[in-house]
Image 1 (cartoon, rainbow over the protein chains, first blue to last red):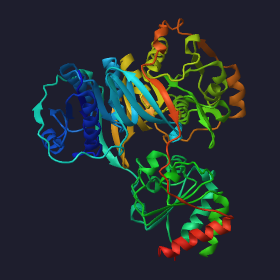
Image 2: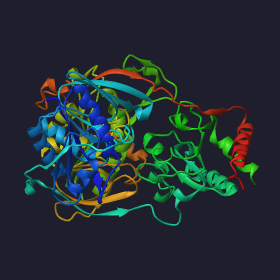
Image 3: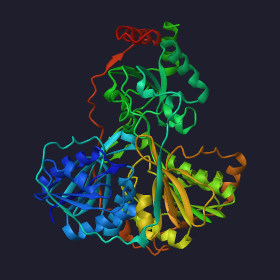
Image 4: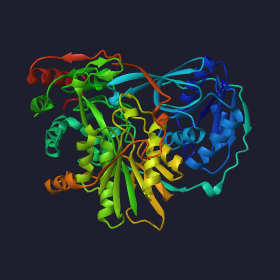
Length: 317
Length: 263
């Protein structure tokens, strides 16, 4: 009744980091509830994954060997059966693209509330307090709910669990109804290849929504030329088709760690920051002094990019 | 094929704003069609233009005020709209995923679409969960975070790409009927033409309350209660350069020279 069941995330043979973060978040919750932390490892090389996930704080690992890759129907069926077997208070999953492909279905199937993209969690008795952002990170909110729930956690918010645990590891005998599986994964494709690898650049001149129009990109290109730097961008620029996918920095694009990252007209949504926070020096040019990018910038200019960028270019021409 | 697109008017917030209780003060809020839904509408309209879809219907949960926003979808080519509102929804500051699922599932059962398109998430509350929850509720198949949909369907199967993290796409076949949550960048949403905007005024916009849909009022009781809202504490130790554009550009130029990265 007071246990926590966390569901590991893996892809193409590797566990994703968020799996170890889930152990940390799950252990904290289980300490609050006074229960055990269970992990579910579904599909792929489950024994190998289970061994790696056996870190400090894990009480039991349940493996379900069914197929190599993620399938949301297999996950949904397995997790609902594990819930019936273990009766945990909370089901904890990553707020990854795949997490969002099964967690809401699990919640609905079990008639439980679902709270997604949490960045902090605490429990007092039966009351869960979940912290999450709204309005693209402009505000944080706390939300309370009573009783059992499905909760997804944002990636890279909790530290990864370390050490070696002494969890019991056992196969769980899930009954998978093959007839209920309505989707088939046929393969994967790496996108964003091509002429330029922005992750190799020493200096990135990175442009976001603030550039307003496609033709305004010229001032960004001029600056990059003058600095002998590489042009990259946030998501909206690529969504608009103004730059190819291989220029996109962020969660669904590339992770970059240049010496200097100049963010021009980029607000700094969490998905973008995930791709560039490791840069040595971050400079933000943005009219909004409250933009989230300012939280991770080392230097900032709160001014109009259409004034600052040409002035900067001029210095190096 | 009939397509149902869920659309939502979302609140947009100015750069500077104030919080009153658990809400952003009204004077700092604007309204717009949810960005992700704009892509979902475009995808549906393109399927109609390609002769794949016969009818595109939008559904929203929202008060009368949002009709202007919802008509944007009609102006872009959707055939008709359903708007659900009820006295019991007045003053509810957070409608959680289960509540939206219960209300929308009643509309799905009435409309009986072959394909449901939703945005991946809403720009305001950003749960990112309603599409998948809805699919499970009505017994449809689903796919989350779809950034490509083949417009030629192989019988009752949709071929999609799901945008995973790190520049990897998953190629997946999904049996219809299905709900797909649509990611930005899947297409280029059009601007409504003047003719479209005029036509939208004459298109059918049905208003239904919960009783019309046989949904019990208890459906709007969210399990999740919003208890606090605040501006995140800035952990910033940023050095802000002040002055004219020439001054600040000179500071940045000097930094680049100091770092040895300037040519």
